[in-house]
Structure formats: structure tokens, C-alpha cells
Image (cartoon, rainbow, N blue to C red; front, side, top):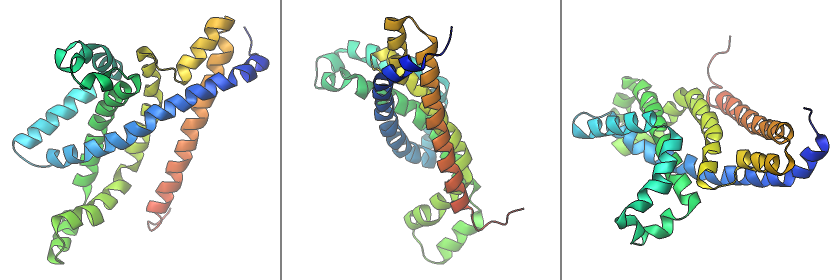
Length: 229
């Protein structure tokens, strides 16, 4: 068993097409997951039924494997007549839509807890000062609490994002040909498992480390005012 650079070069178009599918799944999930996570995190900071519902949402979607959710959304929900016999079938018959829904639910569960922790870490004095200055709760949230929380949660968000990049490989289970599935396809018709999988791993490595570099630069920019030792 050895690495075949010729085969790697010949299979590169297929692997890059799979990489494009990976990003087509990943980018909407990151945006939708963040949008869904914010109101859940805010509800989690409250008391009463809304806080309990938010805590249940976070606990459930952090506990269920993303692959199980993908199967449930892609194969389970279409079995219901309310989906199969209505306009919803147009959406749930699309593998991309199902991937977005399944992974967004998983991502939002983790992100809601990350955002909650960041918001809780904002000093109470800052909030009291903003109130004294006449800022509305909405202005305080978007001008003070969220920007400050972003600095606190950057490392945790980096870890979640890198995990989500790797989690996209699960979409091959619902017929999408992502990077991992493309490597397996090359293996199927060449009977060489080593070359395409190592090449795919190298592409994943490049993606992950480019993201890590971006987060490092963002961390330096956000925390440039802090004293360095």
C-alpha cells in the first residue's frame, strides 16, 4: 500500500467537487444555527417556563448524534402524512434541505450554550452602567453584551466550528456526495483506499488550519487592548 500522486491528481476534480458540497452544507448551517441559538440562549438566561424549555432544547440536541438527526429528518419525517402529502414534501425530499435542518439543530444546541456562557460572563456593572446612561435593553444587548461575549466565547466557538466541519461527513448517509463520500467513490472504482482518503484528509487539514488561523487573527484583533505577557 502506497500513496499514488498520479491517482491523487486525477481524482482531485471529484474531491474538490465534494469539498464544494461540504461548504454548501456547512455555511448555511453556521448562519442558521447562530440565528436560532441567540434567542434560545437569551431565553436560557431567564427564569420560568421559557428558561426550562430552552434548557430542554439544548440538552436534547446536544445529546442526540447528528447522524441520528439526519436520518430522522431525511427518512423519518417524510413518513408522516403531514409532510408527505403537503407542500412540505417539496422541502423534505431535498437532501440539502434535510442536511441543513439536521445539522442546524445540532449546531444551535451547542451554540446556544456557548452564547449563554458568554453573555453570563459579561460583568453586571457594565449592564448597570448602560442602563444609567439611558440605553435600552436592545441597545445594551447589541452594542455591549454581544460584542463583549464574542471575546469570551471565541475559543469555544472555534472548537465547535471545527467539530462541525468534520460532522458534515455524516451527510453522505443521506445521498449527498461531500468530500468524504467523494473519496469513498474514488476508492470504489480504483480499489485504492489509501490515496483518496489521505488526499481527503489533507484537504480537511487545510480547511481546519485555515479556520484556526482566521480565529487566531480575530482573537488578536478583539483582544488587542489586553496586556500581553
